[in-house]
Length: 357
Image (cartoon, rainbow, N blue to C red; front, side, top):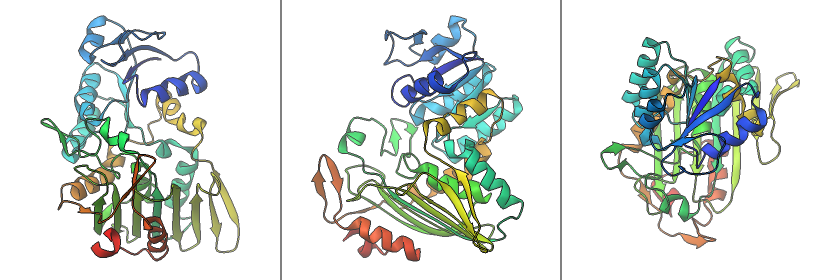
């Protein structure tokens, strides 16, 4: 299959590397679309706009869209109209109602439209999800996750959309839960095949941004499962994802700080290993599966996550941390990770004072 890559710089470079290393050579990139990378020495032509690519007459079968979120909707529509299958990076777009439209439009045009949450293309997660559906674990009791991914100030300052509500007239709604750590919040709903019924949350910011770089959410899914999520970009420690799903018949664990292995322990003591989640070859599965026509993460699969992100981001303005420190160009909050770990253990939603002071 011929591939056109929308967004050659940024995360697009990851796609270039993954395709070169893991994708069968019968599939190849025939063109790129990126106004900032025109003229770079690549093995394929790079066009300044999607219209310039479509006018070129170059034939493609699959579009991989790895551009800023405000570009996604129009690029997805143009690719659907051109008859291409699509792998679009997360989030599929900024607004829930736009995502619903894209889902319906893709179905109407018989277009395969996958969303690049790589965990949802991984064999480990898909096997676990299937076993849960088949009743291996019984009723889910709770799901919880936390992580602290430090981001330096340049992460926000060198972008015209990260941490912003809008870019010009275009909604962006970029936050820690819709972008960088989105994989793990979405994963909760995807694995348990359910969506939030009700929830409470608190958000705060340490960086000078419009949205937030700290968030804690506690709620209940429509299937009755309690869920809890805590994510930081301003933590005083760097903590890789930790999550746990407890069921009647066993508990599923993942702690990337200890090892990259998704596993479970059943009530009778049996241990089951599902596999790694973070290796390059796992990430490449989203490309390989799309090329094989196996779309395991569709727009409808990401709607619960996007709806939640929209509701939280469009709610009351976030709190502001009382005291911050700048260490190696990272804005941090002293002691917050120690509190985050404690809250995670008890699935506690902190008060405003407990979070920001």
